Image 1 (cartoon, rainbow, N blue to C red):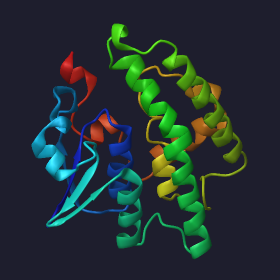
Image 2 (tube, rainbow, N blue to C red):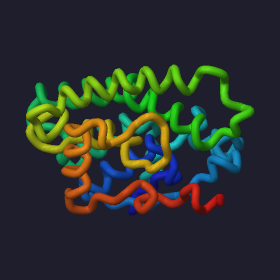
Image 3 (spheres, rainbow, N blue to C red):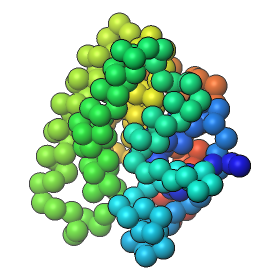
Length: 211
């Protein structure tokens, strides 16, 4: 049975799971979620995921939520992108947890507020604050990638799929690839992997669809 990923193209967190499954050669298909139409707030979706979020991974009667958990499950199931030892796996998870809090945790809200929320609804001062925290996280990532190809190990892992989650999107949110040469080169290496696709090509839905 083909697994399903409830997702939409604008979601960086969903992209982490979608990219992981694609690079790990795990058979899956997207199920578009109308986030901007309020679908995640409906009783039907909350029955699927009480957190009201994407991504949601469904394989028959088996359901998982939260991108990091889905990534870890796929890596464990396929034996790919996981790290080759217990020590490497812990290092992979260390960077996934860091990303969820420090990198994607700032990039996601900054991008949403700056691009998808009407100006009159944006909390005053929130975007500059988030962008300042994002810059601090990018400095950490830029330093980590100095002299190395991949974040956690000598090969690509789900840590790379996690940390890139918001960094391929074209909308302005405080990240300019040209300002971060190590991150820029790393993103190019990821994009050169067999099967890689941009989030708007990998998952259904994009701002152009709502224009």
